[in-house]
Each structure stands twice: as C-alpha cells, then as structure tokens.
Length: 210
Image 1: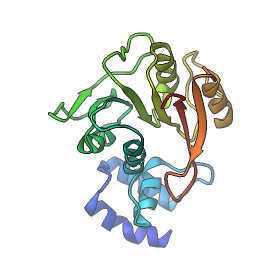
Image 2 (image 1 turned 120 degrees about the horizontal axis):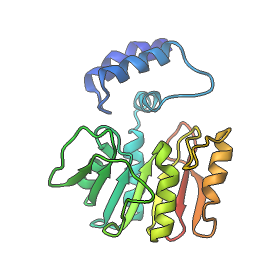
Image 3 (image 1 turned 60 degrees about the horizontal axis):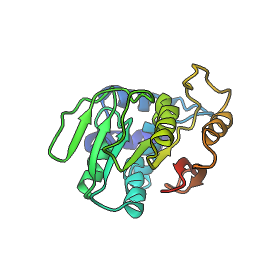
C-alpha cells in the first residue's frame, strides 16, 4: 500500500486512463481502505500501470485487432465517459461507433459517438459488422439478446459482479449471472475465460461465429 500511495501522484500527472478528480479520490480511498471482496476498474488499471502494463482498454483492443479485419464497422456499447476503447480501435483502422448514456465527447471524423442507452427492443444493428462491449453492466443481457435476434457477431468482457437482468432481477452471485447469460442461446454463444492481463482471468461471452 505504501508504494501505491507514493506513486499515486506520478499516476495523476500522467493520467494515462483519463480519470476525473472524483475517480482519483475514489482510487486513493480504495488504496488506503481496500475491500477484500471487490476491486474497482480504476484500481485494476492503476495496478497494471504500476507493473508497466497497458490498461484494460488497450489489452482488449489488442485482442480485437488480432481477431477482426481492419476496416470493419464495430459498435461498442458502454464505452463510458470518453469512449476510449473506440478511440483506440479507430486508430487501428476500424470504423467505430460508441454508444453510452454517459458520453462526454462529440463525434469526430474517426468515431461516431451516440449518447444513448442500448435497448434490446429498439437498437438496430443492421449497419454494423460486429458488436463489442467491455463490462457494460446492466446492458449486458440487452446486447446478447439483440445480437442473437439480429444475427450479429459479438464479444463482451463481463463485469466481475452480477448486474440487473431485463426482468429487473439481480442474480445472487456472479456465477449465477454468467450461467444465465451463457444460456440465453447456448447454441450460438460461448462463455470462456482468457488471460488479458497479469492480474486475473477475464470472463468473456461471445458468439460462436466470431
């Protein structure tokens, strides 16, 4: 902890993951008072930075680059405040659209930003080749059902805690949540764990055709 507290000022100055002052405050509190059961996204990226590794977004982008052809049109759901993953992938040659209700950036020549909630019933995927998401929280089930129904390949990095289902229910634990998601269409989707970073295995759910 002491080493982490010493290096937090250096991390603030470089701010490689574009954190807000509020996020830094949350991170510092978590360093001083760690939770034995959970760890925030901000803390994971900070620990990776301390190890000289790239962020979760950069690691997931590398994963996508190895599997999809450049030039394909991708919809990222849940890109957060800055749509950083979409911006990284656009630099790699992908045609990116990012959708999130919390977006604080405007559309550019390289990335289209849509400030909206992804909804299974009304979000149309016809113009996209693939759908991706990194820990999209409550939108997870919506994405899977929409992609299965509209026959769009997808890959989702799952959160480490359960989130609300479309029914309004929240599963008791993460294992129940993963099982539920995997069984939405077990013939067309696959749940697996991959090694994206040095901290832990990363759960992903993807379409079989990816």
